[in-house]
Every structure is written in C-alpha cells, then in structure tokens.
Image (cartoon, rainbow, N blue to C red):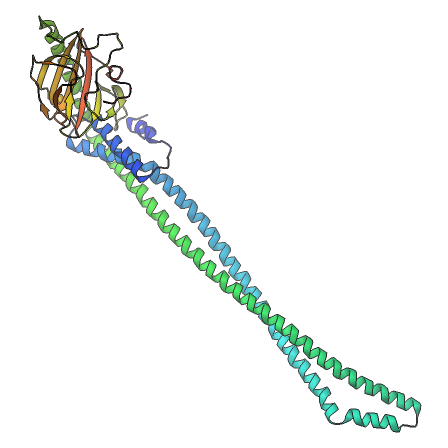
Length: 408
C-alpha cells in the first residue's frame, strides 16, 4: 500500500457532531500538530500541510452534514409526493361533490315543477269541482271512486311539498359537502406548495454541503500533490533534523564531561535518572506534539520527534525546569535560538525556537527562572516551545519529568 493510501486510511475517522467553536479549536490544534511535523520543510510544503490539516478536521463534519442533507432531501421529496397525491384526491372529491350538488339542484328544480303542477290543478278548482260532483252523485260506487280521486289529489299535493323539502335538504347537504371538499382541496394544495418549497430548500442545502465536501477533497488532493512533488525534500529535512539532534547530543555530553565543577546547583535540585522527581512546566500552554515517532501527515511514514512541543503566545516567558548550569545558549540550526541546562546526574533540558535568549553559557539558573521567550525561530511554523529532556545526551520522553496535570 502506498504512503498516500496509508494517509487516506488514517484520515477515515468517524464524524462527530461538534459545535463551530469545537471544530475551530480542533482545526487549530491539528494545524499546530502538523506544523511540528513539518519543521524544516519548505514554505510551500508547510502551507500545504496547514491546508491539509484544516481539510482533515473539517471533512468528517462536512460529510456528515451532506449525509444529513441528502436524507432530508429524500424525506422532503416523499412529503412532496404525498402532498401531490393528497391534492389529486381532494380534487377528485371536490369534483364528485360538485356533481352531487348539481344533481341535487336539478332534483330540487324537478320537485318544484311537480309541486307547481299539482298546485295549478288545485287553483283551477279541480278539488272543489270533484268534491261537488261527489256530493251530487246518486251512485254510491261512483261517489266512492270520485272521493278516492279527491283523496289522491290531496296526497299528491302533500307528496309534492315533502319532495321539494327533502330535495332542498339534500341540496343543502350537497352544497355543504362541496364547500368542505373545496376547503380540503385548497388546504391540500397549500400543503403541496409548502412541501415543494421545503424540498427545494433541502436540495439547495444538500448542494451547498456537496460543494463544501468537494472543496475539502480538492484541497486535500492538492496538498497531497504538493507533498508528492517535494517528497525528497521532506525526507532530506527530516534527516537534517536528526543529524542536528545527534550533534547536539555530542555537544551536551562533551560539555558535561568537560565541566570540572558542575556548578552551584547542578545535581542538587534537578531530578536524577530513575527517580520520580519532576521539572516544573517551562511555559503555560498546551501540548501540540508528543515525543517519539509520529505519522508524517503526507506520506504516512514514521517521523521521530525528539521532545514535546508546547504551544504558547509569542514572547511568553520560558522558565527553567529545574536548577542547573547553562551549557548552551545560542543559535543551533533547526532548533533556532536554543538553551540547554545541565542539571547534574547526566540530565539536561533544552528549550528551542526561542525569540530571545535571556541567559548565557556558564550561567547558573534556579528553578522557574525566566531563561528566554517563546518564538518561532529555526525550523518552526508557529510560536511554540520545543522542550527536550536528555540523559547523557540522548533524548527521553519529557512527559514523565513534568507535572502530571501538565500545568504551571
């Protein structure tokens, strides 16, 4: 597997919902970590590393936002389709109700015409004439027949009135049903319009989220392309830093061996190898890079870091971790302005990338004395302290020698 593939695999971390402030904090921390890994690289490579760090932190959240947006789009489209179906159903119900209303109006009109016909007969004297003929009839059978006809006319009149009343009631019911159907159709249409607008907004959000993910992926790809073109330079810079560290180890050993008198504080106040004694934290800040081997942000290869980096503001005072004698105070290649203090017992501490050095070689310092200021000299991409603990010149992890709270 290529180094780039290793890197991409390392970046495949699960997305975690975070606030904007938390994401910004994570971005700044990751950029500081990448800065410490790219000390000594060219400015172009370091800039690419910063872009890569930002994309690395932002991408999982952007991908999660895209997934959520796509889910919302799908849900909104379903609601939109359901709303359109509801509109069609409401329109069909409205048409059916209007048809029933028209039929009811026709029935009322027909019933009214029938009643008018019956009442016309009455007004023309049909009932009175019939009653007179019944009363004048000498034939009982004929009288009964005529009386039955009279009863029929009365019943017809009553039925005509009842039919009109019934049909009018049905017409009113049909009108009410049509009105309700009309309201339902209008409500369904409004809901459909709102669902369509929601779907459109969700699609816009998804498109914006997709654009952000694409931009971050493009940024990452561009940064990796820059690193690929400078791969040999990066390897050379790492080798240079290792060589400088080895040279510093030899110089520390020589200074310790050459010191006939270790100094008034040497060996008396600093920690001895194998003890649980601690130095004070040299500067208030947060640890931006650990000691030991880390993965190169571009190639995925193991890169050795000889101390811990403590991020702090430019010009912040740097304090001596413990009492001892200054055995180095000056420029040292990739370390920039460097101070090293011999604490006795073969133990020394070194403080790199200072903006200013406030002590000189051979000077005795006590615990917590200010020996310099935070800077970004040498192979550094931002203000921080590179702090080392060395035993007989060799680097060891400084963390066990510092307060467990990593605080001042």
